[in-house]
Image 1: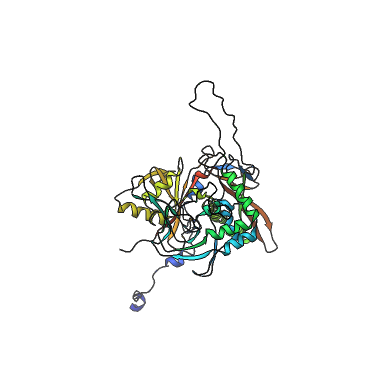
Image 2: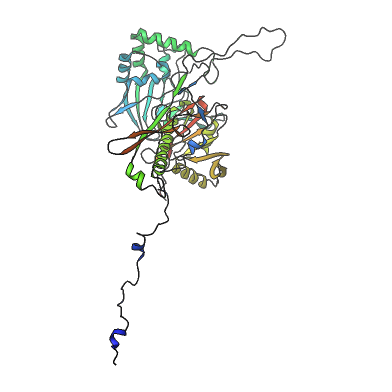
Length: 483
């Protein structure tokens, strides 16, 4: 019997033939190890974490303060159709202290029309200390240094002006026709104003302002009322003075006094961020293991709502911190980048500072300036995380702080807490269908397309209890120098 050797011989394979099931096919029958859905837009949200949250049970929060006589500390605004066509918006002239609450729109428009555009190069002079105040200046764009003689005869920088600032409102102190100030002396510039960068400014001669005062009885009456208001006894913060006697001897008659309050205190109403989350019932029913589709969709949606909440707390024009800092609490950098001197000046404006908030690029720029000077900022533990600090104050990254034109930003300084008369966050808890404190998820039903809808709502706001609770370092340059 012969054996067919060819039948018993093993089958030969060529190189590259597959001998077993590959992993790509095998995963179709296997349960993989998976993560929950990831979200790149989640940040540290330091502002939400460090703000103390106050219950606003009535949906509003009223901030009562002592009566203050300080008026008109705002900034004027401009419209622009090119560097040669810059105009002041007439209604914003009421931000000048003497024109605060002046209601004659026609006269404001005429005053606005009398401003002319002045372009100045860096180093040019706007005003000279000791000379008569003969011009009202409005800074449309650029930076101006206010310099003068120091105590020991050297030149010193007393302050800075930037977009929207003004100088020369003493021109409104002149009497009709005479050009002399109310106290009998012509006002003079106290400092020299130098353009630190190229500056676009608007100027109007004092003679034009006096002509309007001569012609308008309403303006004369308004300026007289302004002078009488500012002449009232007030402390260094502009608040109505509380009369006291100290250091007396014998039976001196003691003054009677009281603490006056603002008649129209500001009320902060809770704002809201909302969205409608939609999930198809087929997805929720069939694809709900091992992870709940509803839970994951809600988690990502709530993260997005909280990110928007922090953005609003920084940038909202009604209650956002950037737009609600008092103008007396705003300072400008000395040279552009954020230096230790700049942060020291920012910290000096309030009796206590709990946190510094800055864009991450501003923190990096501050680190470069410290390195140039051989200074090494400290670090500290905050809520279990190591963060940079300056003078014992944590410097926290907040990407929601905007970077303007790609190279300038702001740094915020906060004192927080209701007991410390600081900055507080506002919310309301105990909402129907509350998912997190101040955030509710409400079932809205199933429509005819079998889509389930949930209303996600977060209610919040922020309040600055006294002006010095919040300060801003403006025009912080973050561009890295070449070389």
